[in-house]
Image (cartoon, rainbow, N blue to C red; front, side, top):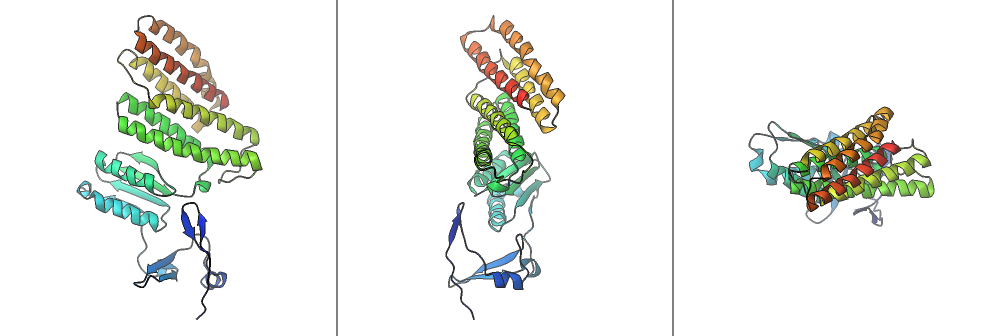
Length: 301
């Protein structure tokens, strides 16, 4: 029996080794092939080729039955097992609305898993993707940043501080990954994501566009609403949604109309501030900063 020695290498937060080329060729293994691993009682790690032919394959869905909210630990254990086994897409689905307690628990553990993010949430579904940051398309990152800010506007309106903090922290992580993408491309000319269809000028526009998103999120993070400015706030929220839609659908006409809209909102703020107290005037000033950032974003689409 041939014994092979390899040194461990560190990639991201994980330790990895390469598999012997002869062994992978014998079993026709390629990138993406499934293998099985079993830890023996003596500490030996047994690696088996073609795990999908050996019996059970771990599915990528966690189905919550009507009583599942009473078994949060089981759900989290299932999530951890699937993530650490290499599942790249995990969908948690429920026949009823997923409770706030379970949703927050899932968020807590996902935040602590390496290279794992929640990419979509609805009342009855949570989609989790387990990926290396280099595999995330740049435009997907930008759309994700936009969706976080849309959520933050809504969180503020509903006075949901925990959701606001969660979306802000998620935005910061995605923003950091996006900066790595663009800086690397501008410095070396090498695409490190799956996107290969933007020019250096577009990369600079993406960078400025996302800086504006981050600045808006920083304002929203510490913003407070009052009943005297809520109607104006809703108009700013709608203004941002129009720019988000323009970017998502590459709608130049909608972007141009949004760029023109600043003047109307500015005039409305002047009329509104005449009858406001000091604190509400400061709130309006913060919203005017958001308006300027939105207009700048519209110009970059």
